[in-house]
Image: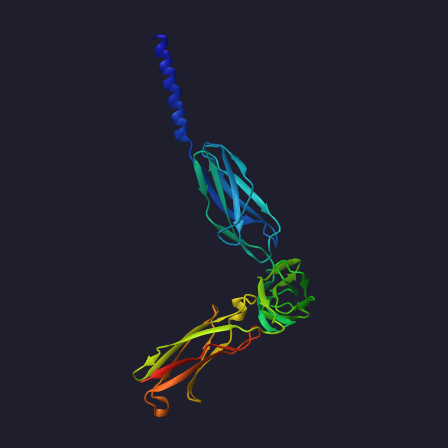
Length: 336
């Protein structure tokens, strides 16, 4: 066999070995196993990884839902082609009485594999539940804030944080809720507030050194003198010819720029129909969150038996703590 042929045979043999090795190796296999050493604030996650002949790395994911949210640093599971490697991860600073989800994932140059979801529950009572509630009373210089707390069978300390922004600057005095398993409504008055100002607040509940924060909420103190809002309204049709005579009054309350819609847009609009000086109908329309209003007024017969009848329409916003009462431009409609 000449030299060239020998070289060709050697190259073919080397190529065959490379192909065989590539075929033999594959993406890893993983198995998420049950957690162990479960305490009130700790647990050990366990699993197995089979590298299938290629250098393989693995990680654990865990969290309160199957979205997980926390992942461990990457570790090596070696490159064994035939044996599974037991892996584990110790978790600390967990919440007591809480269900956690976890899984094992692994990857090598041939691909990745994801283990099945498993879960465990830490020992003890869960942390307190705290939900910021609505304002129960507001004035120009004070407000009463509310919240709901479930102490989850542990004596719980609570207070409110508040201030002109979500960073807060003040807090109420601490109070306590006795150990129990039922939700409890709590409240506190915030005195000495500046008028016409938006404030943020939230509830804070603490037991066994675990702090639970309620969501941020806002309120606005009443201005020292409520400004006028513009009121625009239109009643249609202008001329109703057949019984029953149906009119729709729609419009908008327009607060000044200093008063956000979320606080200004409340209360009712009063819609009155007059024949001469005699009021023949009255309807109330609630002001919606976007400051609009709409209501229908129906007459089954012509008021005062006039034919035709010309009615005067007066639309009045009844005001609230943020805006004073005001009227829209007077309109006229006809019946018959």
